[in-house]
Image (cartoon, rainbow, N blue to C red; front, side, top):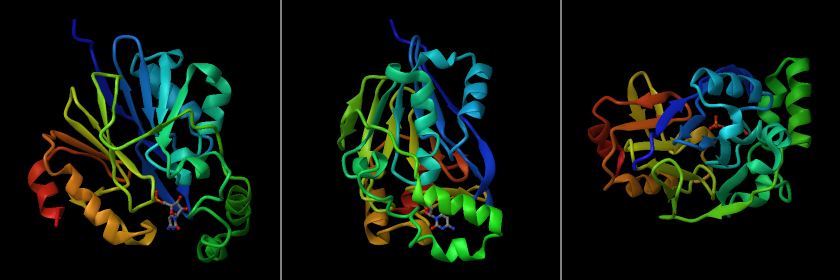
Length: 244
Ligand SMILES: Nc1ccn([C@@H]2O[C@H](COP(=O)(O)O)[C@@H](O)[C@H]2O)c(=O)n1
């Protein structure tokens, strides 16, 4: 029997890096399990938990967290979720971003040196907070690393697509049942238009643009961008216009 599967974005509103920001982790579920894709900034777990309850998914059902990459706004609440749910949750990420998430290497972007220009512009209280996060970044163990083309057996099958560029281990996810592409930061959705990677926060633009080719042959009905949310208008036409 086919499981009942679902996809729901969890909008998180707040201030990050000196600007107001809305970001969109995604909740996936089937009859008995739930999966969270990305965890928001530090301190977001309570909002995520409330949104899970509103969707009728008890937090105890959360069995996996998939991190699209190492950036602070994606891994921020990972330690608090793992602390609360403990051994029931498996954490997944690509092996190239694993050491940063586990804290054995400093985060590639959210470190005091890279963030210096932003830190210098912030009011004192926010600067101290971001400085503290740069020096004490969230970290937690990655239990399983993910490889390109692998299919995780949750929620009708989640295909892993390695899309390096924004970070070396950036992944996107294709949710087979609903034909939803969870693009992480490989693309953004702004003013009802799908756009490519953002140069200001992408470590290797050429690689990031090249990674979009991996979406070319997918049948897609919706794209969830971490920045901008869900794109459902002329999805394939918009996507093909970005692929060079
Ligand atoms: N103005 C900014 C915003 C963010 N950063 C750093 O880049 C990382 C990725 O940010 P996204 O908004 O693309 O998710 C973020 O974790 C910050 O470290 C930045 O340098 N300047």
